[in-house]
Image (cartoon, rainbow, N blue to C red):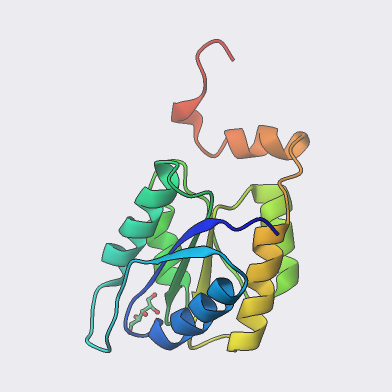
Length: 152
Ligand code: RB5
């Protein structure tokens, strides 16, 4: 697939899985932007979710990747930002369907809840699956009612 600019970040709990995802993405030619954390010291996941959410919401990148212990804290934090649709993924079926139906733009993983190989497969499916649009576009539009286009 075409190489993508991909911002990625984790907290301390997510660091090992983040590094595995980063290596897999780089091996496939993607331009990965590792926004931290870079060491084992305890950090706060909302700070890292904000960095990736900002890169995606501003249009700098089409998708982002976040990893914490469960993926849940990162998803909660990222989803508070307008325009962000972050999904916690456990397998490639969830990855495919959240792209096709929810137009998800951030993939979240839990380093304590998923193995690296399964996460890499899910991430590949996430990046390769287009949004289906149609009836799903109407539903996605209802997720951000305040940003509805004037006259639409
Ligand atoms: C850190 O211990 C842990 O709470 C965090 O990585 C994450 O799982 C929160 O959702």
